[in-house]
Amino acid sequence: MKIYNTLSGQKEEFLPPGSEVKMYVCGVTVYDVCHFGHALSYISFDVIRRYLEYRGYKVKYVQNFTDIDDKIINRANERKIPWKELVETYIAEFYVDIDALNIKRATIYPRATEEIPKIIEVIQTLIDKGHAYVSEGSVYFSVKSFPGYGKLTHQSPEDMRVTETSVTETKEDPLDFALWKTAKPGEPSWTSPWGEGRPGWHIECTAMSIKHLGTTLDIHAGGQDLIFPHHENEIAQSECYTGVEPFVRIWMHNGFLQMGADKMSKSLGNLVTIKQALERNSADAIRLFIISSYYRMPLRYSLEALDAAEAGVERFRQALKAEGKQGAEAVDADQFKVRFIETMDDDFGAPQAVAAMFDLVREINRGSEKGMDISRAQAMLKELAGVIGFTLQEEKKLTPDEEKKIEELIAVRNGHRRAREWKQADEIRKQLAELGVAIEDTSKGTTWKIAR
Image 1 (tube, rainbow, N blue to C red):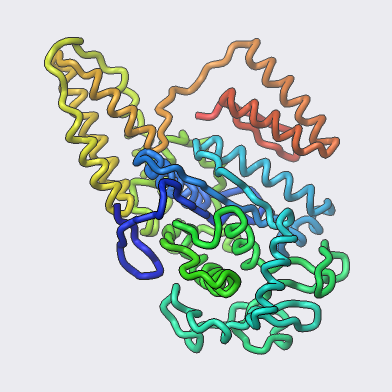
Image 2: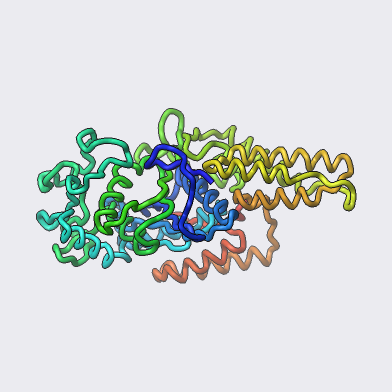
């Protein structure tokens, strides 16, 4: 199996030291609902995880929540609610979205605010080793202390732009970045050896990934926008902290989702939320649309392409319903599995793997018309669909009793939410998800629908 490594700029043989793959994927900053760009990233890495498991690996998959930063604080202040309430709301919404998209949950979802002791330990070690310094209550990483800085982006520090524009006057070098930020009046803060404050963005992922996966990760993944400065900074602080190189064996980055000529992003305001997408198209169609493009390439959002994907998914469903003749000459399905594995082994070539599945669909349909035994070919199609993450389920129809049960569960959940009993509310949301129900909390109350 070969995987493209951003660090080396080429495909490399994937040779983890054991049967367990340690995989870390950068998660969301929970100040708003997830959009289609998040779906692109998390579906792409979900397919990769599923395929690694299909090939016999046990994947320990860690994905963090950044649950404290300027955006969260500002959004909570705008809404005049506690920052923790904002965070809990959007973490719950995140789970609703990924469940509706049939994205497997991570092994662990660590939160930055729950890892403060580890973060402080990492920062103090960096200070003790001479890689970080205290300045006016904040702590900064000294980029010049790490000779390898720039190896992920293949640039020299002199060629890099300044990325930390705040409190620049307190830094020794413009490229130095904050590990700990001194508290501002009225902001949430934690006690540290350097005074009240909160962690910087980059150090969170280093502390969480090392705590849960060890000093060397097999795969670290995220969007291409994270290569610099986030992942570059992670390498520097992690390798300086542990003294172990490499911090990551394979760096993987997915391409951007484009809306016209621009990238889809919150800052540009050109978002299609996951909930909006699911109102129009099934989770299977969204997944097929995303993986029909190579994960490292940009993907242009297109309603026409989504509709074509919907039709493609229906072809899969109908092939599974086709009838053949048991005991007759069987359709040869092995060749399609061989093609599927060969293309996925080559840097997870999902577009070609899906093409092999569509060719298998054609053979199933031909075999059905000729009165052949298609049962084994259909089983193969279902197996490969599971590897990709398709459910191929028809939309559910509910009885009045089932609808009543859903309404009752939502009423109980809303009671927990009013009491700020977030854990209990999330447990009910999980129950609803298991029933195939997607819920959304709006200003007018909680709405629900059957996930398509």
